[in-house]
Structure formats: structure tokens, C-alpha cells
Length: 105
Image (cartoon, rainbow, N blue to C red; front, side):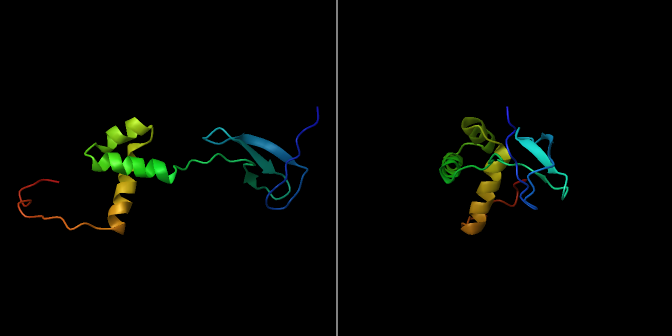
């Protein structure tokens, strides 16, 4: 059985490509002995689609907590909070702060 040919993305060498563990996502890592670079030939994407982000924002605006949204959609609640914060920076909403002086944050 013939080995698959791997090519270093930096120097282009096809020889001297050795396995060097795995990433957190489970993809195989390789190391080039010529230029000492570590690389992953086919990395997995850890990015949510725009529709998933919109769905999370919609659920959050309906009154669900970030934790509930994260559980419902199978994502980390920190992502939901970060997206909400980014959305607020893009289009800040004027909120009436009267009566909030006794409120604890």
C-alpha cells in the first residue's frame, strides 16, 4: 500500500513529512523536516454559519438566557453573549436608564 503524498505548504517539499500528533478538533498534524513547519493538510472549520448566528440572536431577543440558547442550539453560551455584544456595538439602542440608580449590576 502506497503512502499518500503530503506537501509542505511553506517550502513545497514532499519528502520528510512526518506525523506530529493531532489538533483539538481531531485532525492529524504533520511536521516538515526541511523547514520545521507544523501544518494540518485538511483542517476542520469551527465556524458557525450566519443562519445559526441569526437563530441564536432571535432566541436571545425573545427573552431566553444565553445559557438556554447555547443549550438549545448546541453551542457555547460565550459565543451567544459575544455575538450579542458585537450586534449591540454595530447598532446601539437608546435605553431609558431612569429608575436604574438603585439597580445593581
